[in-house]
Image (cartoon, rainbow, N blue to C red; front, side, top):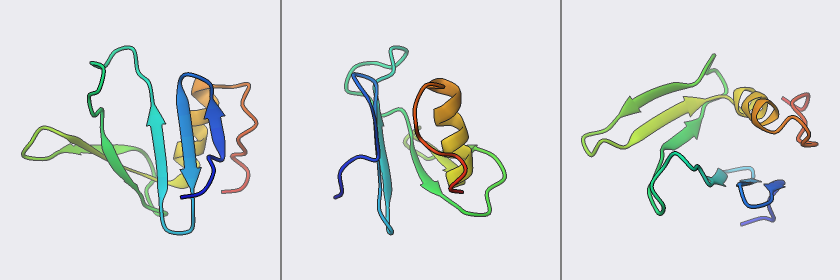
Length: 85
């Protein structure tokens, strides 16, 4: 795994490689140790979509740009660049 390309101290860490993107987020609305969702990046996704599997786990589909836009919305002072997408 590579070093995180973005860290929001105590809240969020995001790593991106050529084959995977992985993020961990602390969410005060979720139970400690719980899994909020899993997801995959899809370059043609127009928006975030969500489906639940048979175990009730939410799976999201999103583009890199949509993820970058969400990061900027949640943490507007971050230096994470949306223009790279």
